[in-house]
Image (cartoon, rainbow, N blue to C red; front, side, top):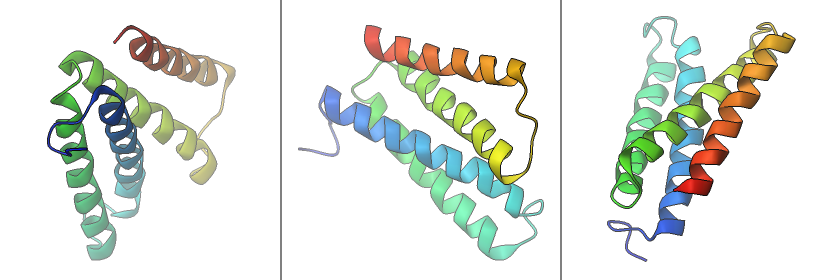
Length: 113
């Protein structure tokens, strides 16, 4: 495997990892206290750069619209779910339904790409 030109299955794996890293840096931003805390800020910046880099590698193979939408979908859904668990954000029926729509959209893009 060449990491610089991934195959389609490899690109999907890279994109999934990039999406999980997006969740990590999005949630991590809460701990930076407005980027005033050194270690959380450093973590967020390193993880964000890693996420962007993997997204860029995946986009060499996957369509840009699909890759970006899946990346954002994983990040949005993951951050929302973790927000409910870590920060006691509301877990209403409406929010859960909307999260299911995001997941369905991501799955749909995977199936048609």
